[in-house]
Image (cartoon, rainbow, N blue to C red; front, top):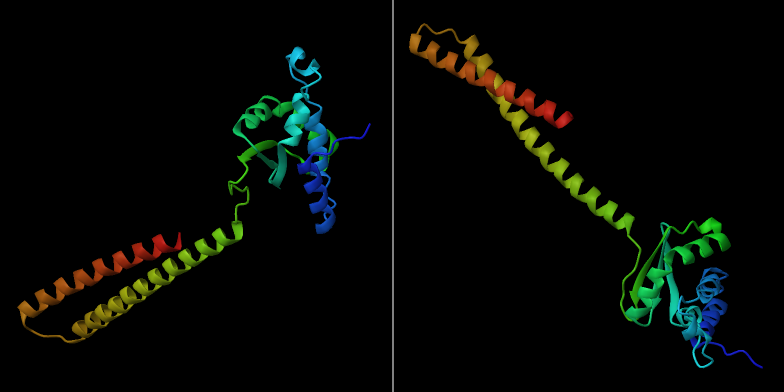
Length: 197
């Protein structure tokens, strides 16, 4: 009696051969899932029906593994319900056969969808670095303008202190300028401390 080979199994074996991929995960997946037995004994004892595990194995395939999450593709959403029911059994079987992969959970997608597990950390990091660099440059320019303005006010203050005039109204105006320069310097110091922390 010859063994019937599922088309999805054949395609998986061919893709492994041509890609040179020695990944054992797809074959271990099929092996573990095909061992699932239904609680309804009468449906699997029938000679015309395949056991639930073999049907699950024939209608699912491993797509991706990232950060301990195994992405599995199914032909129909109904198979996802079965996989969720037997998830603990599947995870135990996979981790027993391939302990170095440390599979923690399963994620599912239906054939034809483009859902993937990968999170492009490098692109996100680059995008955030560019954003923060631009913000720092903007703040540095603002700080430089503020510093220039402060230096100008300080120079004006020093010049006004050097010019001793006898006019009282001029002295009053200078003291108001002096107070505004002092207030301005305090604001500058506050801004510096906020930016450095």
